[in-house]
Amino acid sequence: LFIDDACIHSSQTAPKMSVSSCLVEGGDDRLVVVQSLRMNKYNVPNVPTAGICRGSCTSSAPSIEAFAIGEGVLKRVREVGAPHFADELRQRLRRMWGLDESTSLTFFPSGTDVEFLFVLLALGRALELCNEAGQRRGRVLSVVTCAGEVGSGTAKAAAGQHFSSMVPSGAQASPGTSIFESNPDVVVVEVKLRDSGGQLRPEEAVDAEIEALVMEALGKEAGGHGGYDVCCVHLVAGCKTGHASPSLHMIERLRARFGSRLLPLFDGCQARLRDGILHDYVQCGFGVMVTGSKFYGGPPFSGAALMNADLTSELNAYLARPGAPLRELVLRSELQQYLSGSLVEAECLPALCELLDENRSIVRGTLLRWAMALVHIEEYHDIPATARDAIIGAWAAHVQSLVQNIGSPSLKLLCEQVSSCSNPAGVFGVNSIVSLCCRVKIDGRYRDPTIDELRHVHRLMALDLSDRCHLHGREVSAHEARRCFIAQPVALGRDSAPVLRVAIGAHQVCKLYERHAKLEQCRDVGELIGNWQDTEDEALLRKLVSLLEHFGERWSAAEEAEPSAADLLKYDFHLWDQRLTWTISVEVLQRLLRGMMGEEQCDKLIQCFLRTQNVDANALQVEYEPFVEYLTKGM
Image (tube, rainbow, N blue to C red; front, side, top):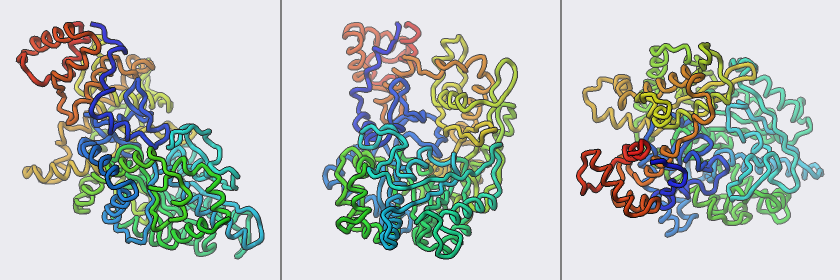
């Protein structure tokens, strides 16, 4: 029996669809599910999916536990209203992060969008300074650090520009164009963490470059003016490879010199942070950015801006005065394509709430994603910090040991010391992101892959390759059949090969902690991780090595990374498997197949399958993967 795309319709009425469709509301093009893949552009599904999840430094599929609360969350939002529900989420987050009531918390569809709030604050200061000096236009310089190892849209967003062709409201946009009608003067300078060969630059060199930029922009002499009114400097607390930059000491030195003309921003979007760090940086007067969709493992994406009472009052004052420059700028902007009034804390920023229209899609999707993230945030922070640290450290050591023991020329570790900036920035003492240097074998020789080749491998890792192996007449190995969700490849430098990454997230830490508590025979955390669920990390690494070693002969063609019709049917049946039991009810199977092939043929097909599986004809559940294989092989 030939299965083609005409058979793939079952997802349209699946019970997961209401929650999964809301999950991609109010986001940019990164959330769009590519129907030919059943995944987004980062190769992540928007429903719970059985697989090995080690991609939390990019994004994660929703877990079973988080997805299970989806319907209840949507119902709660309808019952109490979005503003009230947003306040409930804020109170829970404040408890987890040790924030006081005076800290404002504004929700955004993603961490990248959060930049817009701090663009407003910087422009407000700049325009106020210009007004005092009798000038008409304020200028802002924003220094984005760890360029290439923060979000791909960060630089554009920090300039107040659209960074995606689709914005959270659902409208279309031109990336690189300003969200403000008057196109204010916001200039972004990117500072790299690495040299062209991919090596980490000395911390002193990075600090010196940033300090020179700020001194030139704001004026070298005390009270001088270098052409810019305000300068934003980002302190990245955990980039794509886990490092922090620049140093806190350098930023504090600039603050002491330039006062309010220097606006420091703390990029904690990876959230791989010690307890209390968000509170500390908020209290120090940094604008703080954080997400629930990186380390915390919430579904992609969710962002939040944190500000202390002084920054919050300052921004509100710039927006509250009728006719004030910043107020007029916002009124004639497209900010409401990204932010809705219900996501802003009305008691803290009433003027901003007043200026924003309500967009149901932005609000519902953002609140749903944050509510799901909180499932893991609360569970993670309930674990003693010493236990969390031990698990993260043991996991990283275990993965590094596995790579060395496998000993393939196709795979080695990117060995780098954690920078001294990491401790003041509050990043974990052990790098929870393991970067992997890959080499592909083509025509009997190993060579460095291009970034596009690693993206191809990344896609293959996320697929069950069983059907591909069958089509090529090869037996399927256990690791080829497993879907492995890892982090996107990262280009380290112009003259350096890119790397793939694996990372532990809060959800995996919680699972390990729970498992350790149940296994009294495990003497320590390291032993537990070594025996974790059929050695998941080893299966992941062996699949990666297999793809790299056989890249030229088996996997390099583009079509190899396209799911077959049988794969898609399997994935769609999976939508009915709410708890990942790998079974589907016969009643549902009949309903789906009758729409494809008619009642008589459908019932005959199911009965034949049940006989081949030695399953009672009155069975209520069937395993859907063997059923799809049965269809694929033509009965």
